[in-house]
Amino acid sequence: MTLTQKRLLILLAVMIIAFVSGRLAVRGFLNFLVGGTMFGGNFL
Amino acid sequence: MKTKKKRDRRMFFVICILTFLISFGIGVISKIAVKPSWAKKYSVSMTDKIGKVYKDIPYGDGKANKFDLYIPADAGKENCGLVVYLHAGGFTQGDKADDADMLAWLCSKGYLAAGINYTLRTDENGKSVYSQSLEIKEAVPEVVKEAERLGYHINKMAVSGGSAGGTLAMLYAYRDAKDSPVPVKMMFEAVGPSSFYRSDWGSYGLDLDTDESRKSAAALFSVMLGSEIDAELIDTENYDELIKPISAFMWIDKNSVPSVIAYGAQDRVCPFKTVAHLVNALKENGVDYQYFEMPHSGHGLQNDNKLYEQYMNAVETYLNKYMPAEK
Image (tube, rainbow over all chains, first blue to last red; front, side, top):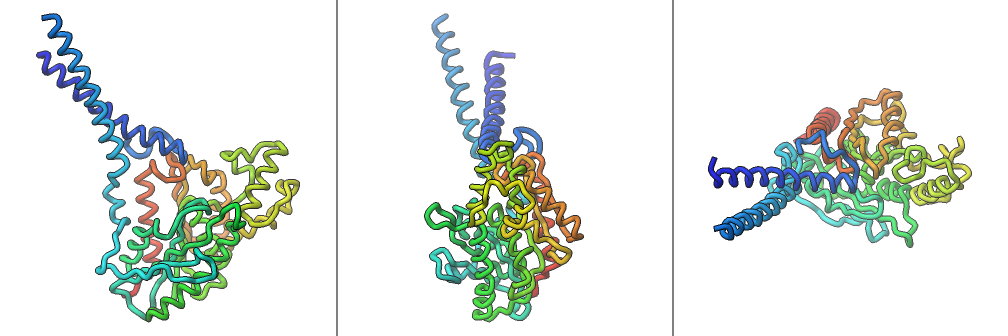
């Protein structure tokens, strides 16, 4: 695997983690305001 | 050579951070803005094809005593069904305009739909859940009269709402339906408190075995009731009679209307423990009801989309069964 391929993979992983974190952050904030669990129910 | 490698690595690190920030933002926006596909069905924008809205029709002396009436374009005029939807906002905020999509959806189903404003509680005006429920009771005959004036004869109605509006909807359906100008056929609501026992209100710190907790409970429930509750009475048998005017579950009997209700098990705003009284009363009195408990959600019913969809489907089923729209 070339260095460029490795870096692209890392970027992809960063994108997925950040996207999921963004959704979880909103869920966490809403849960803080009105109650709710971080996991379970809706996917993400 | 080494310097170039270092620069490359630093640049890649910066790109990673930027990618993270952009993807995080997209995640946040997607969570806030993208509605599940099934929910779009219940979020209707009012158009001439659906019907017409008559806004801010007065029904009382108060500045807030106004309602919006949604008339379906294809409504028959003889046997119309009315659905009243009452807005949320903790009895202190909110407006009928907040439910425009829901009212438009009901209108698109062939019902005359009414969003009624009530006087919101402030420290100065001394309004309460009880006074607000009386305003709704006063408003419904005016809604029916206005519909008649426009040429639509209403012969059945449903009452509904969310949170504070849910409480007021239940009070109208279970306490005041006998005085309604047209028969109330059903009620649907989500996350509205129906009981006010301090032992259930732990999320407000009212369930502690202390004088301070008893006094706080008496103070909060006095505000809601609109008259003074003595802290010494709050754990006694006499309390039931005191709080009954705003405790919707206490008014449920064998003749109570079919009901569809939804609550979040993690709710801290409308404490989840309050729900048991309501569900037991519906069950014990043999009322036709459906109860949707959302285990991962709080006051916004925000984490259980599948169950929320089932709740809305049940609302539609009950409307079709008890309030068939005639065109």
